Length: 260
Image 1 (spheres, helix red, strand yellow):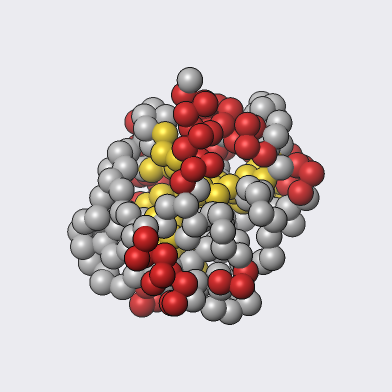
Image 2 (cartoon, helix red, strand yellow; image 1 turned 90 degrees about the vertical axis):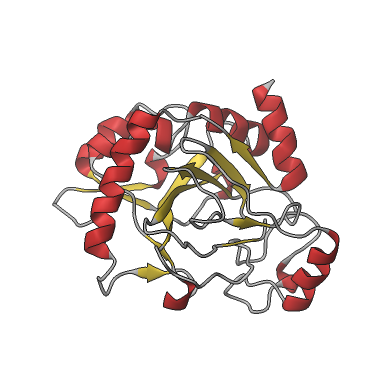
């Protein structure tokens, strides 16, 4: 029943939120390391800003050391069960990232789709977002545009390579279905069709808001994205038989800094 309702809501809204899907123990373990890395990395010249520094939104690679590769987070069984009913068996994981709303930042992202290229009119790329803390409008809950995974395409983007939605398009959409900024609890997952419009919002608190993101697609699609992991992680990934991640993984023998 949870799988059926999850699949139905995903197809209806373009995303579905699964509450209490990850234990708080593993959430806290990864969250603490993310905060530790954030304090080191936020002033690095290698910081990846999402739509520029003024957006107050950046990405940071999750910790890739084997002890942080929790199946509950990287290859969550409930999430994968739902993914399989959308894109087929053993979905392929090809990218891991995070979305961080910086504390005390007043900027926001433009309304956009993460599917920048010409795409099919059915779900292909899905992101599983993992919530490391309670999120609401005060600390940068994501703005979602319900139902925008259908009925829109590349022609509605303002440029070829950004995925930003034309102002006249999202203004017309807002008149019939305005965006929402749902409160989502720690340990929840959000499965989102990359075609669905959304935007990072301002974080008025003193604590960075961090959501992990794992990109899945059907194996037939042949994603060009790659996972770069230490060689010690191979044994862990080999146990995740319900997903395909070995086919997209490059294992590095020597030490490397995953934040670079």
